[in-house]
Length: 136
Image 1 (tube, helix red, strand yellow):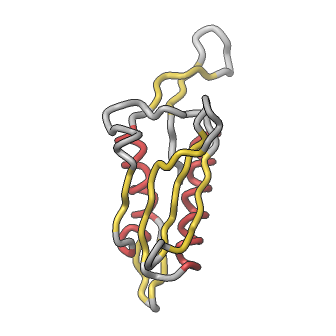
Image 2 (image 1 turned 120 degrees about the horizontal axis):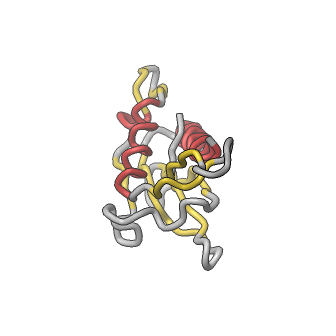
Image 3 (image 1 turned 90 degrees about the horizontal axis):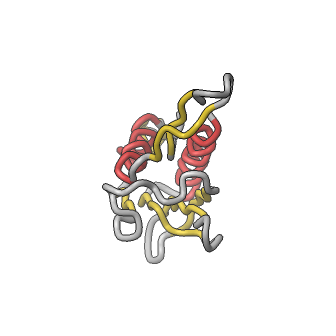
């Protein structure tokens, strides 16, 4: 599984090298996050389901990352972490490092009521998928 922020193509003048074809939109990034959640199998109280099926909601930050716009930081580092919710449940948070300020920005959160261990396993899957998409 992988989540890409950009698409490369063969470099026209340098054999064996790649060059940027295009940066994906925020809508495409959100779709890929949801696709990974739908592919990820989890166990919730003895029942097998998907990480998407087990979540309460997926919240993409459309205010700072409008869906129709290109993803603003396609080559930056991602931080994916599972935390306890502010008043209940658990959150898997996806943050990206702003390439201009070096501060981390909120991209997406996924809400669970299934325990921190499961949220951590989902965070690990998303982190791996973002890493695979960046370098493949």
